[in-house]
Image 1 (cartoon, helix red, strand yellow):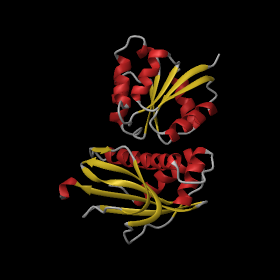
Image 2 (cartoon, helix red, strand yellow; image 1 turned 45 degrees about the horizontal axis):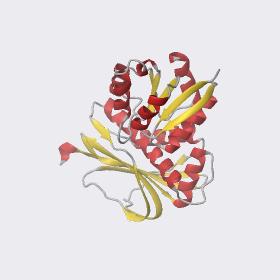
Image 3 (tube, one colour; image 1 turned 90 degrees about the vertical axis):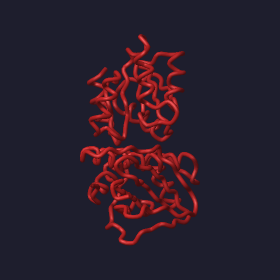
Image 4 (tube, helix red, strand yellow; image 1 turned 90 degrees about the horizontal axis):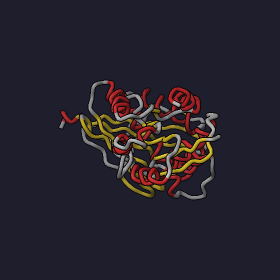
Length: 154
Length: 124
């Protein structure tokens, strides 16, 4: 369905073409990370033949760095512009995943992105295919997460 | 003489990036107006008719598809070229749907100034 390599290429394409900042992928995490502190997470929901989500999780400094590169600006705090930039990153990744699944003849809809900031726990779909990839930027590391659960497996 | 452009996108980030990228293309722009969703875009079109519209598809309230339908039903507005910007640019279904509704072209995100310029040369 979705490979780690596809996720790496989709993320790198966004950074190369729109954020104009270098990004380096690392090996995927083997243990599920569900709790985050001082983090900005943007999430897009998936529905249709699959349920799941696409998430981007970045510490506050890294989120400010990503938004700064996106908007050619500097941000002293995590404000609405930083959250909006993080949402757009998740939105583009979700679009890339939807396109790939559609090309595999699956029917998938994506939600409008939402964002959460602070200390929180994220849900994990049981029996879902789960990928969490760390990426390194100039300002630090962020995580890209995909959870996909085929509705036939319910 | 430069052109007037309407950008319709719920993301402030994307509106800024589209504006920046548009200025990098060499397309001569005099004025850019921003709208946060399709309804704001339609409200603006009651007052002014831009030379070009760049519109997101996936938006709250009035989305890009409904926005296009409204334009298609208006004899004057449907003559304005509309480029749809979408994260689903690789989906043939989405591209066909917006073309059937009268969009001049589709630009998939992420995009570069070269891609936008190529599309502008094709449709303008």
